Image 1 (cartoon, rainbow, N blue to C red):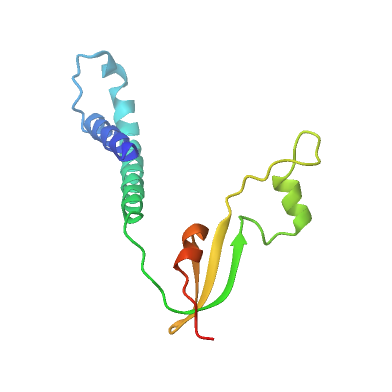
Image 2: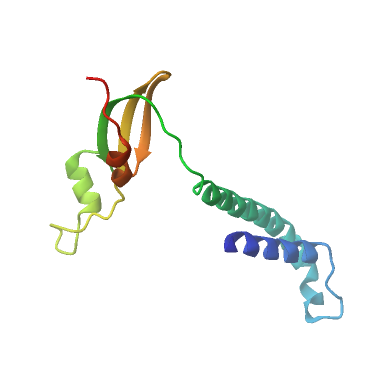
Length: 141
């Protein structure tokens, strides 16, 4: 929300400068032409900046919407991290290094994934592990 407010504020001033709304008797009169020339690209940038802020706000609001239940058969569960498809030695070189070069702290976020076979096909979901076990029901068999 602050992101969007900053974008709107900067966009307002960029458009005001580009439109020549500043008084000619100010100290800015000598460089008013340069300011107007730079204000147009700045206004375009701040429009994109503001739209990005609004998109982030919309995603944040959608996070409060309750999720839905899915019926299906569990095919696989597992944990994933960014870059876990790389060979282990490469992962250690990138994320587990420290000053002495031997061991460090890997602080990548762990995602828990669940693969279900549903009526419409196989689907993968990122789940919260705490609620996963509490909400999973026993299947046939």
